[in-house]
Image 1 (tube, helix red, strand yellow):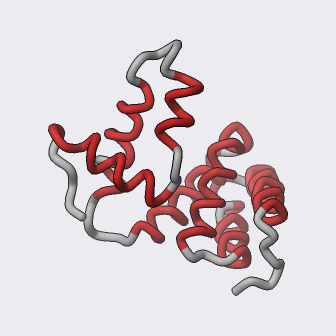
Image 2 (cartoon, helix red, strand yellow):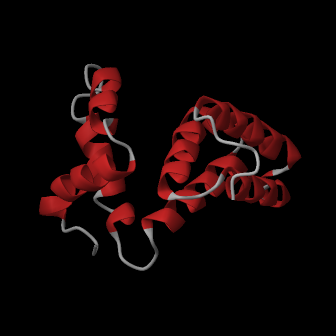
Length: 135
């Protein structure tokens, strides 16, 4: 998929976000749009109709890069990190691979950030019944 033009970023974003995280726009709308009208559409168009829709790297690679970035940012990103860890599993990354990426981020975000991210990952792995040795 190529970078979306502004006029179709929302439609491209909707299609892609439903592949990556089904129900995301509806969940965003339910939580945020009553206080910030249009927030859900803006996020879908901006994120999934923008960078996520570009050619150059696979959606699978973008997902693990997102997990890495959220890990390095620290514990304040735990809710988003859990969502993206689930999406990384769905994209084909194993629990072991995700855990290794999180460990790598200890070098950049610090050990507390990595430990917090591992704790978030374990919650997701357990909820998804992902075996420790999944490769």
